Amino acid sequence: MCHPIWTHGNPNSYKCKAVTSHEEEHPVKAFGWAARDNSGHLSPFNFSRRSTGEEDVRLKVLYCGICHTDLHNSKNDWGSSSYPLVPGHEVVGIVTEVGSKVKKFTVGDKVGVGCLIGACHSCDDCSHDLENYCPKLILTYNDLYHDGTMTYGGYSDTMVANERYVIRIPDNMPLDKGAPLLCAGITVYSPLKYYGLNEPGMHIGIVGLGGLGHIAVKFAKAFGCKVTVISTSPAKKKEATEHLGADMFLVSRDEQQMQAAMGTMDGIIDTVSAIHPLLPLIGLLKSQGKLVMLGAPDRPLELPVFPLIMGRKTVGGSLTGGLKETQEMIDFAAKHDVKPDIEVISMDYINTAMERLAKGDVRYRFVIDIGNTLAASKP
Image (cartoon, rainbow, N blue to C red; front, side, top):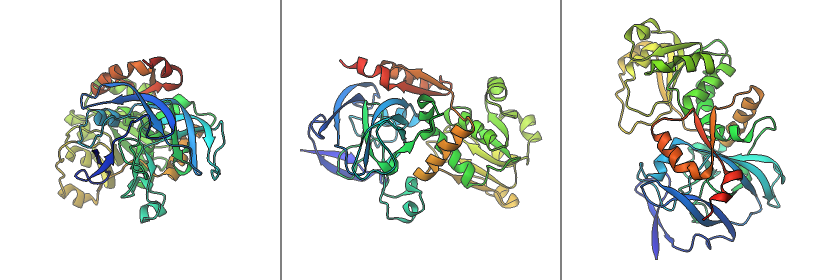
């Protein structure tokens, strides 16, 4: 019997995989919650993990953040989901076993696993510690691993990964708050660094105040930047300035406010996935300013070229970060007390949390308490 599995990098490319029992596929028993179809409803799921290889690290999962990607994949919004699907790529826990050739970790270490667990290790991107851009990268869940079996994410009790893809969590970083940094944190940290928007005194705009936006504000402030939050919602001004520490707040629909801020920003990090106009944002940039897109709207945005030419301005993008930079990011966060605002939930609250996430009803990241609540959810 053949089961079609989408392969990363080409949404029209499918491999055939022999169907075996999810509990018998590998020797190590595992338990988690999975979506079974595009309703996105998650429920208890017994499956299995591979044995700990020579270069592998096995961890007991204690917390897992909920990313908007988990919601999209659970519902097959991008047409690439394979069920049953165990989401979760903001995974933290404690090392329980290491392979004979593992050098960086020992049993008892606090560790995390982010968005990817494999790559080719031979391409130009991999050689520059940019595994996240490898054409053959392997995602932490909803992808095929080197052995041809499906990858399952962190909504589960145990996980195993090659040590190259395991991040050490600093001792002064609480595990629950460390989890969202493995996706949301690196997703904003990497472009701030790469595009040179991390210099003290720079004026940085942050568009959108959600899971990505709120942590972008915190990182930019930690770099010593002046930060302006740009939002369609005037109601978020107090939260942005008083709670998150932004210096200024712009209502993007207020033409007078936007006009007054024209040409004042060195860079803008745009975290919004909804369709929105880029021209007003480009206008906020100084000459040679940079607009970096992190959100992924479902339809193309209109990009006016003339204002780019006239100011030698740049529009770019960014996707998470490599493993070396992810470790650098979480070390920086621990040193500078950059922590996401989270709401810790139990495993059996997951479907309600997904409904709330779809409505934007979270400040600012859900984190599942796997260690204390997963086992109790077994049927």
